[in-house]
Each structure stands twice: as structure tokens, then as C-alpha cells.
Image (tube, rainbow, N blue to C red; front, side, top):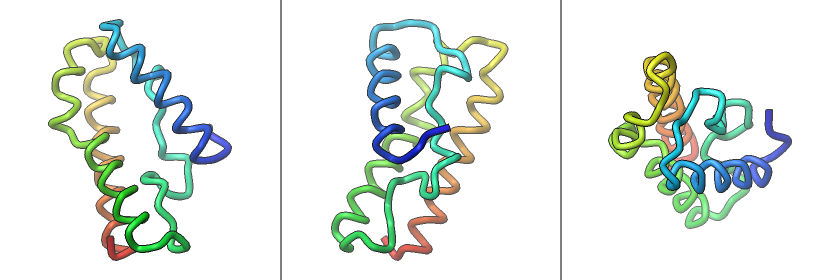
Length: 102
């Protein structure tokens, strides 16, 4: 869905602004990073410090507890799927952390 991490970050920024405005959120509104080579944006080519920063930022963004306040605004029909996908993104970030040694 996204050509690269920069396109994903741009979509995330728009989503975040909309979410902060208090709008209702549908599953399709959320920019899921699952189509990217790295859901955290980290790469083995990054310096260790940069990789750690990207992994930490992604974990903070996608941690299920962080999503709890937003879940009240997710359409009821989409809540279970959103919860499942948030957990999947988090699992992948943890996997990247283990793989990249971040």
C-alpha cells in the first residue's frame, strides 16, 4: 500500500491529526505498515543508534495500551479487527527488534 517508509510516515501524520481531532476511526482509515519491508522503518543498514530509535518509536506508536483511548472512537464493527492488527504490528516490531539486535 505504501511505496516506502516516507509515504507511510506522511499517511501516519495525517491519521494522527484526524485521530486527535476526535473523529470516528474505521479500520481502513489506519495506515497499517504491514506492507512495508520493515514495520518499524528500521534497517540493518542503519547505525545501531538510529535502528534503536526507530524500533522504540514504532513500539511506542503501536503498543496496544497506547491504542486503548482511541479504541472508543473506532467503529464498533471494526474494533476486533483493529485490535488484532495492532497486536500483529507489535509482534512484528518485536520480531524486528530481535532480528536487528535493537
